[in-house]
Length: 155
Image 1: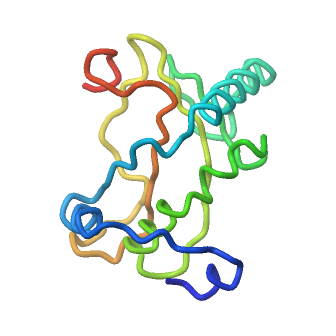
Image 2 (image 1 turned 120 degrees about the vertical axis):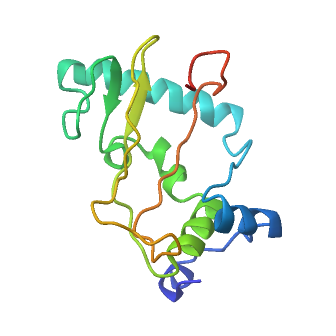
C-alpha cells in the first residue's frame, strides 16, 4: 500500500482472495451494499438538487450526451460525495490495479433518461495498454438506482 495514503490515516480494507482474483482476471469487482440506505437517499437528493440548480449548464464541464442528465466536478459540489472517493475497499482495489500512487481525476454523474444514454464502447485512457499493464485509469460506477436488465440499464 502507498505510504502517502497510510501517513494520511488511510486504513486499507483488505479484499478477499476472490476479489483480488476477479480484479486480476476479469478486471472488475462488484462491491454490494456499500451505500447505506440513508446515504443513498442523500446522494439521490444531492444529484437531483445540483441538476436542478445548474439547469442547462449542468455537467458542461465534461462531454455532454443527448438524453443523459450529466453532472461534473461532484467532488466540489457537496460533502455527501466525499465518501465515494474515500471508500476504503475501492481505494484498496484501485491501488491493487495501478500498483503505484494515484490521484482522483474526476467525480461525475451520468443519469441516462429512459430510452437514451447509449454509449459506444470506449476507453478513458488515450494510449494503448498491454493486457498485463501497466494500467493508468480505474473507473468506479456507483449505482444510485437498481442496475438490472429488467429496468433497461443494461444492453
